[in-house]
Length: 296
Image (tube, rainbow, N blue to C red; front, side):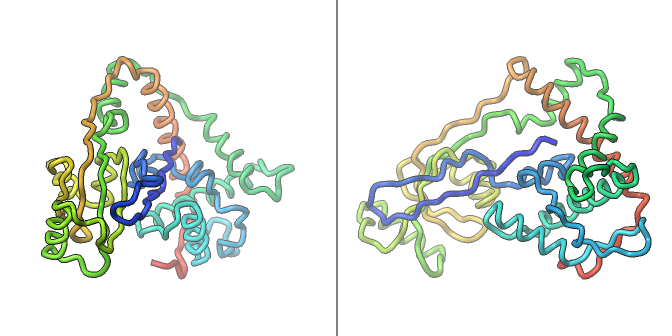
C-alpha cells in the first residue's frame, strides 16, 4: 500500500501587531487520504497492526468465528489519537476496524498455514508471512502508455500542483456573528486593530483541498476571490472568520511525460494493493464476523 501521512496543522496564535513566529506550512491536506487507499491494513498510521493484540478479540470455540469487541475500538481510538492528536471520526473508526479485522484474518490464515514456526509470540511476523503467500499469487497486468495515461488522468489530483494560499486569520473569542466579524474587519482595515484583544493565525502555502476540508468549499472559493492585503469577513462551515489574503500561488497541471516513472510505480503499488485487498476479502468469507459491544 502507498500511505500518505497528513501533516498536523501547527497554528501559531499571536497578538495582533506582533511579529509572526512559526507558521502552518500547509504542506499537505488534512483530509484523511489514507481512507481512500486500496489496502489500509499494512502501513496505516506508521505500521499500525494493533500491536500484539491477541486479547482484543473475544475467542470462541469456533475457529472460523471472529468477534470484534469494544476493546478493538478503544485501542484504535488510543493509537489514532496518539498519532494524529485527535479522536477519529466515524468513517475513520470504521476504517480502523477494517484494518484490525483484515489483520486478524491474515493472522489466522498464517497460523493455519503454519507460518508461525519460530514466531509464535510475534503477531506482526505471522501477518506478513501470510501476506507473502498472497503476494506470491499476485500478477501485474501488462502496462502500456494508454493504460498509464488513463490511470494518471483518473488520479490527476495526486500529481497536479494545487493552488496555495498565504493568509492570516484574526481570531476573536466568543460568539462570531456575521455583524460582529464584519465590524471587526472594518476596524482592522482602518489599521487600528493592533490593540484589540484578538489572536492571529498565520498560514503559509495552504493548498486549496486543505482549505475545503478545514473550512468548507464556499470559504475556499471566497478566499480565492478576496482582495490580497485587505481583511475580509468570510463564512466557513463553522461560522464567520476574519481573514486577509497575502499571496495566492495558482495551481499547475502535471505533465504525464515528466512523471511517467512515478506514475508507473504508483500504478504498480496500487494495482498490487488492490489484488492483495481482494484476496484478503476472499479469505474473510470463510469467517463469521460478529461485532459485540462495539462503540458507534
